[in-house]
Amino acid sequence: MAQRSSQVIGYLALISLLLITTWAFYGLSRVGEDGLSVAVFTDPYIHSLLLFSLKQAALSATGAVVLALPVARALYYLPKLVGKQLFLAFCLLCFVLPTLILITGLVALLGQAGWLTPYLGESWNLYGLQGILLAHLFLNMPFAIRAFYLQLQSIPASSWQLARQLKLKTWQHWALLEWPQLRGRLLTVWAFVFVLCFNSFAVVLSLGGGPQATTLEVAIYQALKYDFNIPEALSLAWLQLLITGSLFLLMTRFSASAWLSADTARTQFLPRLTAYSRLIHQWIYGLAWLVLLAPLLALLPNLWQIQVERLAELAILKPVLTSLTLGVVAAGLAVLLALMILTPIRLARLAGQDKQQWLLETLANHSLILPAMVVSVGLYVWLLTQGRLERWGWFFIVLINTLILVPFALQQLKPRLFQFDDQYQRLTQQLKLNSCTYWQVLLPWLKRDLQAALVLTLLLAMGDVAIFSIFAKDEWSSLPWLIYTYASSYRIPEASVLSLLFLLICGGLVVWLERIKNH
Image 1: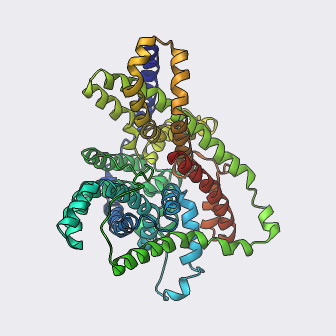
Image 2 (image 1 turned 120 degrees about the vertical axis):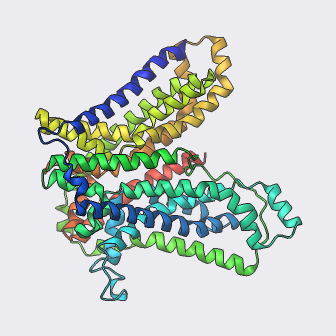
Image 3 (image 1 turned 30 degrees about the vertical axis):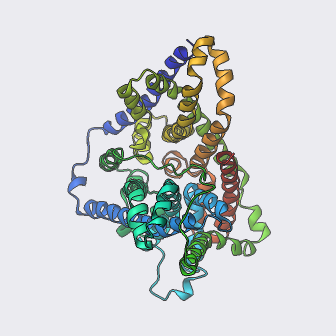
């Protein structure tokens, strides 16, 4: 009976998420007398913009997958690499890193006055396709590395023992053992990175360099905030939703990547490597460290270029508190909603109702289909028609972030809750626990998973730029938005200081998350 009462609350939580999405779609349909701008779909510029969006996403995803494979193999074949666990934690940090930190580092490293720019020739320009690709590779290659590494760990030790008995060569190891294990994951990882890059906002906004290097996400923002062309913004939002929704439906045909799992293969049977192969793997591992660290290390020299007086003028405290407050509230609500929504999902699973379980999970994860910019535009337009934008801006920033974060919290909590059901469901039914007692038993069991879900969603919420850029007024400022303000006005020392501060906050959270996952 305890779970039955929680089931009602779970359904109410799920309905609340669906109502937010319906609210956004209602806003997308309210475009006044002009209606949707059909001319947008026949505009050659929009066609070129769409082609560029697809091109940069495809190149970024392909580059991330291709470059991640040799690094993942190096981690797998050399289990005793120095700093291996630190590198895996660093990969997680890179993936959840607020984008503006990376952008500032890339500008300090490869911008007009960058440390490496004099060695790249006069034709080098960070802004444009090349800068977008570099940023996307840095942000998404670590995700692919972790996903492929964990997939390689699934190769049974018996397979390697048989390969040794058959005296298989290196290329046969790849063809017969590694490739069959990886091929099902390659397309999943590629598609996931493609969607992330297609929906990229902060990277393209900062490094696009002009109309020739603009994506749908940025075009929506410009149409809404600069041109105030609501029909065009809504038309582009519908176009983006159609594309990303189709991509997501294709992705659901494949299993998800367990990229946040801990390194569980402590002892494993591996083939003997030649000295040359070992050297190559070590070289690849060291190069990966260098490439991923370079943009972040490039922030450090700017600390000595900024004067104490200018540092005091940055007014850091308020943006930091704003980011932390928005992040904690949105993350806390997302974890709470995910915990409630999982109750009807668990009951459907226990009852053997597979179709109902699939339907509930699909509805709970539906916000993965929705780009944050699309939801933001729909609710922004509704607020404009009601004349309530200034009063409710903060509320909608938290609301949309919560909606976007719920699927991430769900994926963190679901395995542990399913494990609890498998082990203790019969016992809880026999004891006939009331709701209060049931949760007193369940919450301590979930403690570390709740912490992990909260930290992960907090990291993602604190780095938000797209939602904040739509609803924020001129006098509002979060830490990522303040970094963008300084970086876009070429005040790189100030942006670097703020980025380093943000990096320390995120790094501390990632260290905490890794300790939770490896406990």
